[in-house]
Length: 117
Image 1 (cartoon, rainbow, N blue to C red):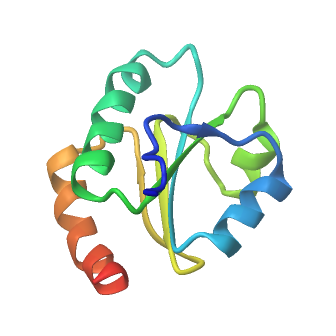
Image 2 (cartoon, rainbow, N blue to C red):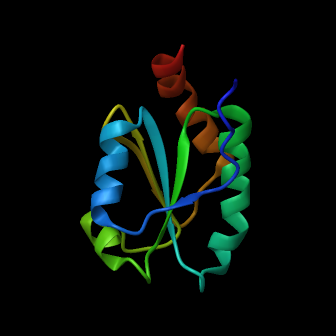
């Protein structure tokens, strides 16, 4: 039986949950945003498509910065959209505001293949 493929961002609502994900997942992407951010709404599905198509072993999570400012504050996230990608418990990539999907794809290829090959 194959594991179910993730098809959406999993919401994170507690700092403890966020910290637990970092400690237990080999690779995790956190998307920090909120409902009032129009740029975020356009970027979010493109980012999810990139991860599902090219890097399916990275789990994707969503943090609403307006509803959960403690998680954003703990991670020094002051602008949206912000993405933070962890590999093997360490922050590897952080991008805010103007995020290029093509650049992100190039930056992810090396660490992803090193961990999952």
